[in-house]
Image (cartoon, rainbow, N blue to C red; front, side, top):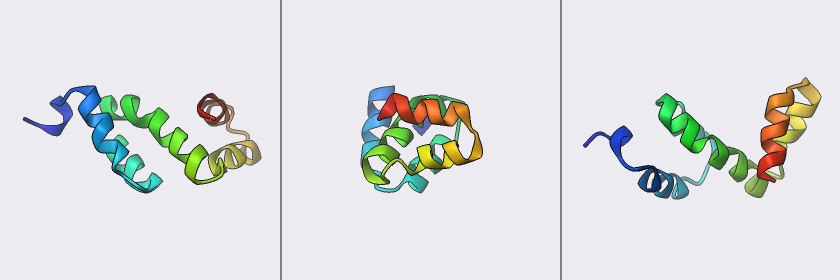
Length: 74
């Protein structure tokens, strides 16, 4: 069975073993389905492990959507 066809719960479980934002981001970029499923995981990881650096980046670059996503996860 292709990875993309696994149930969302299993894919989230797999993502929970990824320890870096780059790894989560890379997996999320492999398909639209994984992007929708893992995008909140990526932002939550940034909040809990990277001191919300994505929020600071979004604020300095005027990226309202990214800032909103960060705030929703933090």
